[in-house]
Image 1: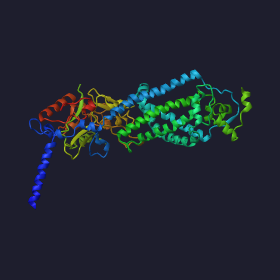
Image 2: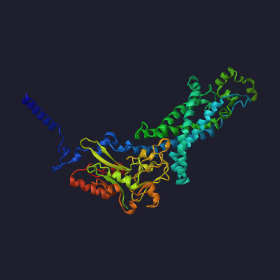
Image 3: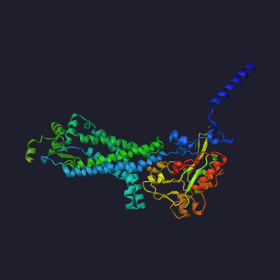
Image 4: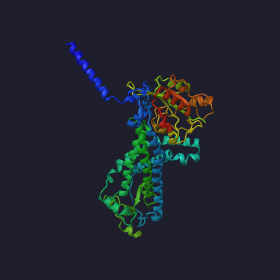
Length: 338
Length: 198
């Protein structure tokens, strides 16, 4: 029995050896140089090969901080190009482009006046709570925007003016302001989402409104409920854009919780791109709420708007409010003011 | 002027971690910060290699490029240094660095990482060479004393080389020629955009 087993063993051994020889790579890769000396590199890991597999080289290290076990990640160079070049172009074009557009628009169209003048009667447009939430979010947004833009544009624009020491002091405070004001800002976005969702579901009237160019480009006044299609767009930009900057921002603020270095780079890219587009969109919002339209700002500041303003821009909403007894229909006064 | 570089001959590194220890001791580096570390790739498998890695003092350094407050500067010797007085601890240099060199003294939530710390090539910082202030912030300034980085100086197998790039590249090439093999200068293509034929 033992003899048979050893025979089988020998046969298997010979077969295995034959198989090995059959699949063996050429001489150079066998770990032998042409002169017969040993070549340990032939079988060792190689930088090029590791890069081809992952574009990143990691191993085992004895340091508790496991991030130290990645010795090379050239992707940092791509991220650098994004941060130093791409983001500046996107931000520059979006923000300066929007400013140029608004200036052009102001010169061409001017302030949208109240066509029938003021009626002298007002109705409540935003409650105290709504205005509080709006201005909390808005003031946080302005500071977040300035301090955030400082990280991308401060070095080329502000640093030469302030000098390195002053610029560092400012940037340090700006960073803390950016980090901590994110909390009231996020709260504001959540509250805005909840308190205005009921009036911001897109509907048929919005399609008409957009076809008419919102009455701003054309001369007509498309129908609108409490919020027209433009305002609904701003609402969704705030809710979705604000949600995205908040989520990516918290990833940046709590680094490496569930993200690796590639995740941090992606979070910064998402945060940067959405933030500059957000700023551009808000410039348009600020314009139309102040310089662009007569009688709009007081709605968010005092909480009330003139009845004729409501008639002109939010006719369906005025009808709804009137039917609830919140405002008398502005029949004769409107014409009298003409 | 010399162009200072590091070169780790991975075929010689025995993962003794003496470079790591020497660095920590020479510069009184605080707990949790490792300016240099040894990483073993394919540990325990045939063909494993250990590489000692720190800041490579890159040509056109990514950290320097992305720093929002411009706290980095490259010396005439090609050493990439930074000012802890200007650093705001934003962490961007760590995202850009191909070698994971920047370190922060604290965990970092709410942007409270503290001032970045990294390998200085034993060349201190912007303070006066050899001053107490420089030592406390950046550690010893051996380069000003005419000495090379301690990690490479005391490497037991002379795997880690430091010095003028052309000279250490020449030493490495001669080694590879004599022994007949070499896995290349790890990180050189990423850091200096060049490779040494092996």
